[in-house]
Length: 65
Image 1 (cartoon, rainbow, N blue to C red):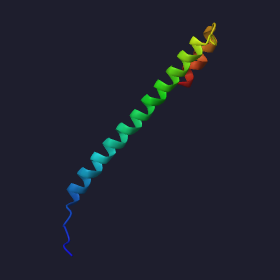
Image 2: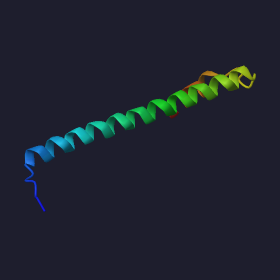
Image 3: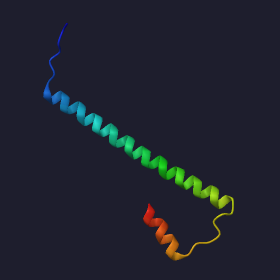
Image 4: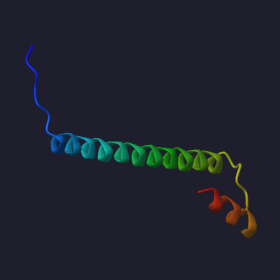
């Protein structure tokens, strides 16, 4: 069996690449969740379920984001 020597710098570089990929996936997940939320809100609006909202309720909804 042939063993490959692994350089610690190479491992670090690969770990940094993986961290970046994970961060991009987390960002994508957040973007998809936001898009789903907006889509659901538009559907509620189209169904006439959102008639009006007062200033305090808008503030409460914005805090959830």
